[in-house]
Length: 183
Image 1 (tube, rainbow, N blue to C red):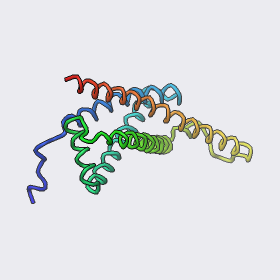
Image 2 (image 1 turned 45 degrees about the vertical axis):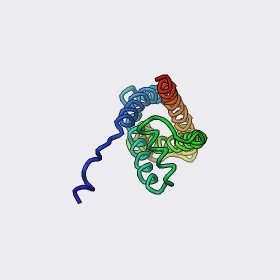
Image 3 (image 1 turned 180 degrees about the vertical axis):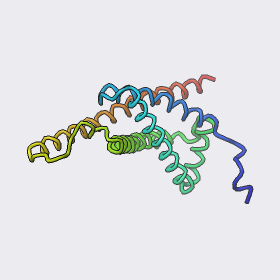
Image 4 (image 1 turned 135 degrees about the horizontal axis):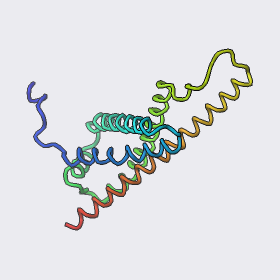
């Protein structure tokens, strides 16, 4: 029983450090985009960027650890080889990596969008200036159109922020893979 609860002897220190590096890169980029496009103050923008990225990382790693045990042995072997040694055994893995990258990008975008929308609604960021007492049909229609515009603006902003942070992370991964080949 105590063997199951003990820490593993080999830790993927490289993966842990790169995840930390990715968060340190993504948070300022996305915070800047939120500040610039949604007109939040800097503190609020950084708070939302930290919350979106940390929660999406936790959700992503949770999904990974739930899916990993049911993967076939060759795919597990490729994952272990990449996480610990930064290379793949099978050359055909790169096509799966590209497909996985697209899936991860769009699922992360959706997770971040819903997290940002939930945070904004729960913290009342959009309803600060709106008084909901006895509004007419015309005012209600105007508020609904304003909410649709804000929703579209949230989608666009989240997509741009996620794209820029993923671009920066992809550049770092490319530098890592090319510098690994120069050894």
